[in-house]
Image (cartoon, rainbow, N blue to C red; front, side):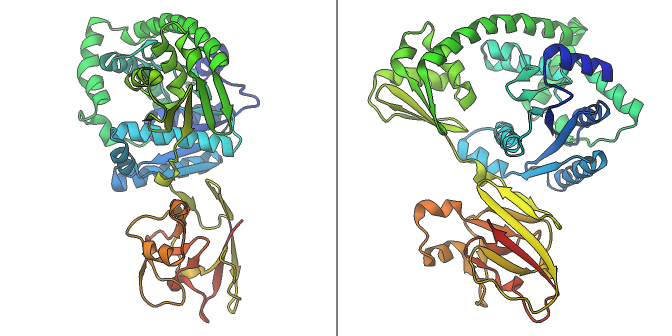
Length: 442
């Protein structure tokens, strides 16, 4: 199997195994465990990224611990993110699965860029591609949906896409690998699982080679999509302008294209806009300026003769962890440096950008997140609780800056420091303090 994967990587031009550094998405399930082990045995450089969506309680906690140990086994860097998935899904009016996918891939790309990695590798295989193709067809789709899952899509690669599910299972058994089973994979409450358990077995009775047949069909559809892609690229070169994180599309240029809705939909795919929303955008071309449209990741405004597209801030739905012994943490524009020192009688920093905390009173890992309604802490120098919302009012923090306030939270959910403002009384230095954790905002 190792040679088959190596050959597929070469044939598809996925990446350069000798020089490229991958970020591998690992859930702990069978597929991603195989991918990590294959890359390790092929001597390819990679880091592991794991998503905790806050949906399965202790089972998900165990998954995260398993993947953390897996990264330690392979001696590779490890990144974990803890998402507030249900809150994001409720705000956007989308399914939990769609919310998880949106948050997941946005985070993967942030990690890839900040860590200067080359590609994001996922463990999709041949059966995943078949399921995706049929699911897309059921929901209604264009050419992109009919080719299923691409082996390479921008910076996302799928080294196992030529492998069947049985191939992965045989590899696990042969190499005696351990993996985690996700009980939700058996639940028919999810559409993909209903297709997997109830529909595909019937289709495989009709055509035992269904996965391979759909793969060939996907290749043919991919050829037609390539023709469309080249036309879209020409249109994009004539109509698009980028400044910082803002993208502008020229409306008169778009109006001169054949199949304007289809072409604009292709142009807006990277920004998450659906086909139906794109139809509304095109209908608004002749309307007044100021019409606003939203996708899960971006906002688009029709402004005179151009479309203005800006990314939305998704980071408030994520958290970042500072493990015991970790000295640096980067969290979306916030850089923290931590130092553990021994000895009592240390001076308390006067700067609001530094917190000196009693290390023995802290429970790790510490989490950095944005403050939330209902948060409270005990500002140092006070004996009582104070709602963080009231504290920020007292501090005269402008309304449009409140969302940027972060807190450092212990593993038992106590706020140790309102970053840039004040530590918590419960973690202050005393005469009994033996070890000091100094956290500095850089």
